[in-house]
Image 1 (cartoon, rainbow, N blue to C red):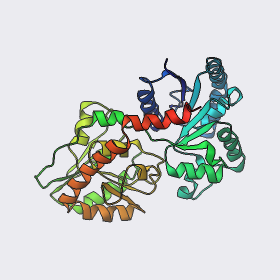
Image 2 (tube, one colour):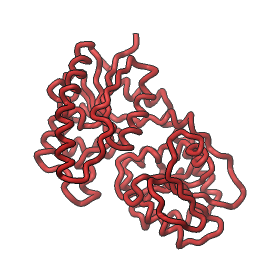
Image 3 (cartoon, one colour):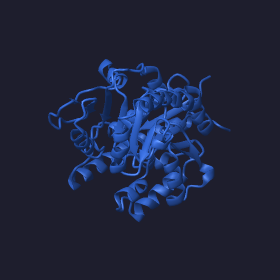
Length: 348
C-alpha cells in the first residue's frame, strides 16, 4: 500500500508554480498523492487596496483549506505545505505530528540582501509559531536552514535538508556534444529582467563586441535589438524550443540581485552548461562548485569580470559543461531526492 500524502501548494507566481510541478512529478508515482492548490492564479498585489483584497480572499479560502487538512488528518494522510504561507492559513487544522513544511525562503532571509526590514517583529513571531508547530521543516538550502534556526528559533531537531527535485530535467535535457567552431554562446533566462540582472548582462555584452560571442535572452519583455543578441519572449518549459535553447548554448549566466533558489540554475546544469551567478542566488551552492562547473560571484561586477575571462577559455568551458551534468546526475538522482523526503515525512 502506498504511503498517503496531501501536498498543499501555493502557486502565486512562476517560481511557486515551478516548484509545485517538481514536487508533483517527484511524488505522484510513489505516494497516494492528493494535491490542494491554495488560492491559485492570484496576481501579486501592486497597491495597498489590492493587497488588502488579496489577504481577504486568502482568509476566506482558508476555511476550505482547513477542511481539506482535517480530512487528511482523519485519513491518516501526512500533510506537506509548500512554504510557510499555506501552513499559516491552515494553522487551526494542523496536527503537529503529521504536518511538514518545505521551503527555500523566509522573509528574513532577504533582509541582508535588500538592507531593509521585510518581516516586522509581529510577522516574525507569527511565522515562528507556524514553523515550530510542524513535526519537521525541510529546507532546500543551507542558507534557509541556518536562517530558520537563527531568526525563527526552530530547533535543529526539527530542521532537515531536502534536495529540490531535478530528476525530470535530467530526463528532459540532453547535453550537447563539444563544438569546435570557436563560438561561445551565452544564455540568460529570467522573466523579471532587471531583478535577474538581464539589463546589466545585456550592457556588458554590448560593450564586448567580440565576433566569437553570441547571446540568447529568454524573458517576459523585449529590451530592444542588439547585435549578436537573440531575444525570446514566449518560451514554455519543456517544449522543443526550450530544450534546444539549452542544448545549443555553452554558458548560463544569471547576475541576479535576489533569488532564493532559481530552478533555472539547476536546469542549466542538467543541460550541461557552465553556470555563473551571484551569491544573491541563495540556492546556487547546491548546484555550482566554484571553478568546477561555474562560478558564484560576490557581485555583478565580479561576475562580469569572471565571465570575460571564461569566454576566452574554450577548453575550460567544455570541462565545466561536462562537470555540470555529472554533478546533477550524482547529487540529484531520483532515488536520492525521494529518500530525503521519505526519511523526513514518513520516518517513525
